[in-house]
Length: 160
Image (cartoon, rainbow, N blue to C red; front, side):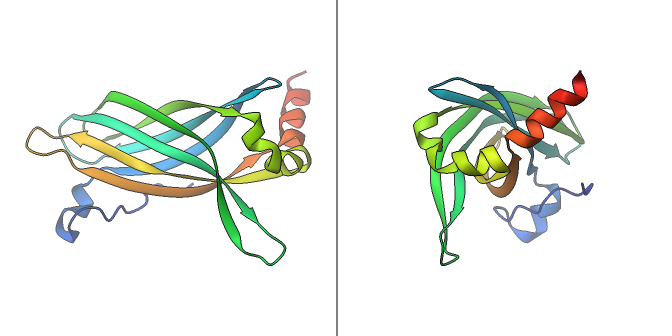
């Protein structure tokens, strides 16, 4: 994984290197019942400033990226996540775990992919900071692959 965080372009060019950056680290399956699935989206927020910063709010939607027989990609809504009031230490990176509850009815189209391999998801949202003088919102979007049942079972077997 690269040390550099992705460039966020919500701020003017001269301020980009001082702007906080956002990266989706991973998406973990936490729990599954007949009606719901819980995942945790781990979001890394980098604060390049030499002072502590208050993250006012981070919110996002989680979509499944599906491809039809013609190769056309579409996003299908799965759920949303949000967290408020997180303190970011100076010149550091903070990983924030955000739990997202998904209704299994919205996952039906992804079930076959999940059972046999993996599912591609897109996380898109905003991070708002309280910098006392102003509160910029930085947009982020990232596509990740969530390992499916074969990978989960393999890890569980390794634990035995």
